[in-house]
Image (cartoon, rainbow, N blue to C red; front, side, top):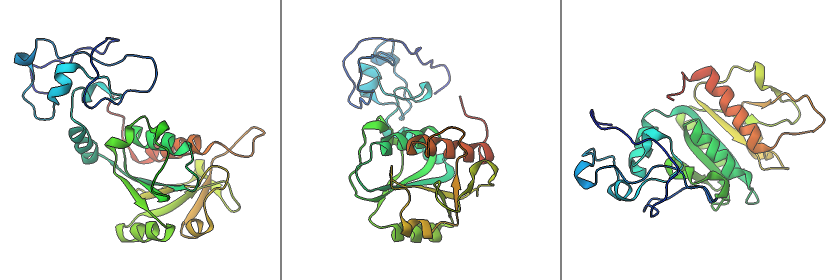
Length: 232
């Protein structure tokens, strides 16, 4: 934000939805209202969206991105993205995919890869996919070829035979984590392309952790090993 310009504090206020509205589909009204002082007080920084300055910003974004355009947010995130990519096999429109994408945004991964069906259930993403580099690969082989070309080690997160504990694993800095569909796990073709399989230690009676929860744990494990303190 330019010197001398102060972001209004976030509050629960009512106003006309902005052109780039992406607030959660619930009853809450969150965010900030129109920029105080009217058009004459608007910042000149091109990252700010004039429609949002006029109407307020209800989007599910952290305060430093209030009133920014989607393009500006994407560019800022990309400039400091981690060298972590994630891939998800989209076999049956799994509801968990959206939740995994939301976690990927929270940890600012460099890219998300959807394998299989191009259309995926975005409901759980809470529109965070707008700010990420999301790519589609019709077959696992295409993803694996991309990883080889870009120098990323492919690591599968799965509790199948031969999987080693994630907690004691040294994760590569240039890492492509792959996750299978709920119930079916990672396909044989994709598993064969992984350098190793890692599992999350469990202490209860259930045989497996929800794939969205497992993905969040795995991504955070990489963050602890390779990323610095969070900006907020």
